[in-house]
Each structure stands twice: as structure tokens, then as C-alpha cells.
Image (cartoon, rainbow, N blue to C red; front, side):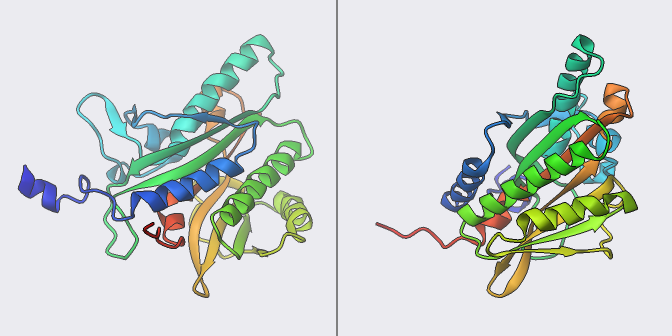
Length: 265
């Protein structure tokens, strides 16, 4: 057992000092809008959740022998809870458009192996999910995309990031007004650069309308610390194509890597 513990990447402690992880997480929590409900997610989800909800290859997920699997991304758990809450709201009012805003910080496990620095078998993610209903004219998308991006900008600034890059990819021509409004609303924010990223390859399999990446400039180089976008995960769960869901996440381990080590006092 001890020999396995020394060599198994899934069970060894995180290489990032706890104090840095806590500082990064505290910065994210302090920037979270009051409207978001912070959840403590279970470390497990029902078996096949990641494949059914987010089209994740099952080989990337660690299954258990009890009909469940280890959480690989908190946005999947948040999507399930958001769908449950939206279903309850629609039962009371079939036209309910009241948004559900959820957040969670969760240590997750990914089974695929990357032979590269900074790629870990388990790591901490801070995630947001906003679920609601299409009310026309991209009203849901306009409001909540800006809310997620403003949160990310505040959080990274609180963590000490002096320059943040937001790379937005429009997956549909209809998303152009979303990009335009994000640029307008955030253009005057010091240290924030918003650029269009039409050549992005990742995320196109599960995101709809628009997706984005967050980068922090560290030692003059961009470090990807988060991403997000619109997905249709709650539509089959709730049973309505009018449902909308925006997800976003930041890597706490990566963000912690940008912080100065704590000093002894």
C-alpha cells in the first residue's frame, strides 16, 4: 500500500502549497456576486454523468463500483442541481424565467495522462453555472455572460493578476452582439484585454453560441486559468429547448501558481 501511495498520481497530495490554494480560493469567493448560491458538491456523481451531460470521453473519468463516478468537473454537478431547481420552478410556473445561480469549489480527478508541467491528476476548480429560460433578443445571454466575465475580472484582480486576457469565440453569427457588448462594458477596465478568438479548437463539441478563455499574464506570458461558455446541458434534463445554461470555471491550482509564496513571520 505504501509503495502504491508513493507512485500513484491519483492519491498523492497536491504539489501546490495549501496556503496558496487557500489564498486563490478566497480571492474567488470574495469576488462572487451575492446572487450566487455557493454549494458544497459531493465528490461523486451518478455513473455516466460526465458523458451524458457534457459529452466527456468516459476514459477521462474514474468510475466506482457503486454506480457512480468521481467528479471530473464541478460544472456537471452544478448542471444537475440547476436542472432540478429549474424543473421545480417550472412546475410552479410553466413560464418561469427566474435564473438559478450556483457556484462551487471542488477538487476533481481526470484520468487522462498529460506529460507536461502543471497538468495534474487531481486539482481544484471554482465553477459558476447560471440556468434560466430564453426570453428573446438574447436577453439571458447578454445579462449573464457579462455577469460571469465581470466576476472573473474582479476575482483575478483580487488574486493579484495585473493583466487579464479574455479570448471570446463566437460559435454562431447571432453571438456577435454578445461580443460587442462585452467589449463595450469591459473596455474601460484597467488591465483587461478582450480579443476575438475565431480559431479556437477546443470547446466546440459541447459549447453553443459563444465560449471564452481567461488568461493571466505571468512573467510576460499568458497562462490559461479558466474558461466558460453557453451549453445546452439542461435542455434534455428539464425537457425544454427554451432552457439556457452558462457555465464557467477557474483553475485554483493554476491561479495559485501566479501568487507569491507565503513568507514566514
